[in-house]
Structure formats: C-alpha cells, structure tokens
Length: 223
Image (cartoon, rainbow, N blue to C red; front, top):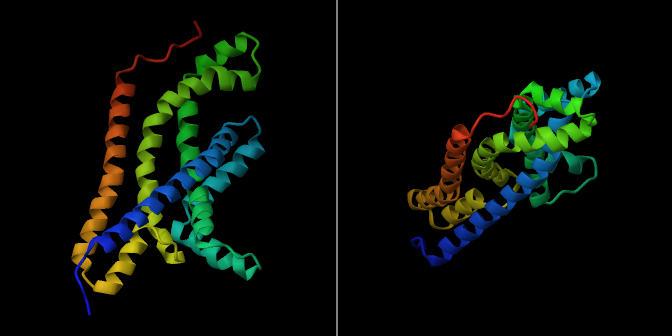
C-alpha cells in the first residue's frame, strides 16, 4: 500500500545529498590535482607536451560524462577490472573535471601580464621559480572565482552517477519514488536540496568575481 512522503524518506534523501557532496569533493580534489598538471602542461616549453595535453583536453571535453561513466563502470570489468560504483563515479568525474579546471587555470596563468615573466627572468630566476613564486600567486587570485563557480557544475553533474547504481541524491529520489510513486513531491524536495547546496556557492562565486573586478590591476613588472 502506498504511503505519503514521510520522515524516513526525507532522511534517505538527505543521506543521498550527503553522498552527493562526498562525490563532489572527491571530484574537486582529484580533478584539481590532475587539472593542475594539465594547466602546467598546457604552458610547458615543450611543444610535444603541449600538443599531447591539448589532445587530452579536447578528447575529454568532447566526450559526454555519461560515456565516461559507462566506460569506467561497464568497460573496465570487460578487461577483468571490477570497479565499485563510488570508485567508478569518482574516477569518471575526476577525469572530466580535470580537463575543465585545467583549461580554466591555464587561461588564468596566461592572463598574468607577460612583463611579469620577463621581470622575473631578469632576476635570474629559473622557470619553476618564476612560475611558483611570481606567476602562480597572481593566477590564483584570478582563478578563484571561476573555480568556485565550477563547483556548482560538479555538484549537478554528480546526478549522472545514478546510471552506475551509486546512490546519490538523484538516485535516492528514484528509489523513494519507486516505493511511493509521488514524483512531484519527491522531485520538489530534490530540487530544494540541490538548490540549498548550489546557491551558496553561486553567491560566493559572484562575490569573489566582484572583489576581483574591484582589485587593482597587476603591476607590469616586479617591484
């Protein structure tokens, strides 16, 4: 016999929301680490490395996240590698996020005025010293607002993990709906939970953008 939406169902949805945040955090950390390497590779002196990393970015950005999930969860077992849903979703999102964050951060590194590189070179600093001591601190300030804003996309994209059986918020909603069949009420609750997770991040991103926009221009050379 069907019953209405009750506290047990709400608790189950909240647990799904918690797993959504866990998966988002996994994707942000993993994708951020790989994406930082992608950003550095995209501005590397080696043309071969730049082309190879650029090919990786184009491949991942041109591949739907859903396909990555299928390849990880259903493709790897065909090769004898069993992957649990959480790991499959985490790896797929990490790969997906790394390509986008890598491009965001590459753009921010290249946005630092060229005279900053030249001035650091005049101080006889090595390329790594120029990058990490002069360029990167300035690029971080530019990269923070779009990175925070991209976190909203990560949270929303975790809903695709339901296709591999991982019980995040969207999948939890499907399970509850299958038991009581009240889609309007259930998906309204899900929409509210996604909004509660994403809206504060959107506000923070816009606030950071305004603060960055009011910030003084970067100096054309080292003081």
